[in-house]
Image (cartoon, rainbow, N blue to C red):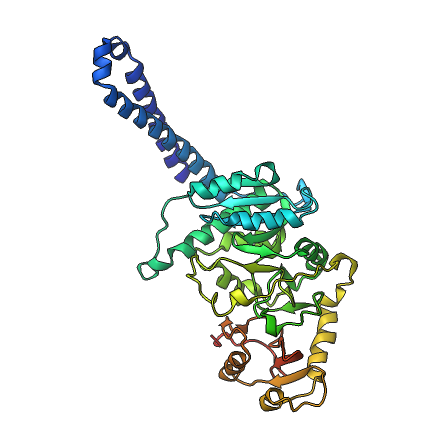
Length: 426
């Protein structure tokens, strides 16, 4: 029904266009004397503009028709992907000319164009940003989200309409990457992110772990608590499992997208990802030292968390040859046996002992928490992000939050008998 409506609109537009052409080029018009043409030049220019606008309408209708029918009928070919060995870098763009900073870093550290093709998907109609993207020529692929009509947003959420547009754009762009371009894996990078020198090496090395372990569903370059004073800068190779979906430079597979695409939300896609219905008990890999850092204070979120947290995130500067390391310790069985047990072997200390430097050794320590308010007060005390999403604290794995305080490893941990997150912790 929707397709028939678009076809009718396209045919009607073509009919109008042909009529205008016939009128402009008819003998009765061109046979008039020159002085008549001079006197009616403005009228001629107006008609010409109408013709151009009509042509644009026809073109947009055809694009919308293709988009709408394509959107509802994506067919994934599981066996004949032509780009199965490459990992697409999907840059999500809109109206930031400063995207040049992001793309320049991606190109600077990329060793192989074939291994990591860069696709920049632009949503907004913003000519200055488009020109910046096009200036990179054949180094990237520039695609443009065609559905620019306004989205119907509930009246109480009008001021958050940007989140609805972002969610629509993500869905379209990911469908392009996994269906149109047939990639098996993609790394999503927002247009306001800097990347670390070992950004590509990190994702290349963790991809086999993601593919092998069904209890993992993403790899992120981001540490939500990656501020200078909260990390061990001497251990850039340290990686973790996390139950909290971090985003901000993250890798997913075609298999996951097939699972998510048909129920993709109309808005707030990142919080939707963190809901138990999507996460399904799965975890992400994340680094001790972030491999991305945002420079975009101004955006849809209006700088939420930027001044207090995001601008202080430390971007790794010392490249790590991750592909030369054995990362199988991140597989669930091995990780749970080693990391979780190590946490609960760490001596239990009080806040006062830690703050007043009353601990006689330099080994990691553990601080226990029991309630939501107890944990929130601890995270605020240490300068950690203190919010929860579907009951999961940022960076947590099995309720454990790892960070450094005064150059000492500290674990905020629930009781050892902990079983699951409480979604009421918000």
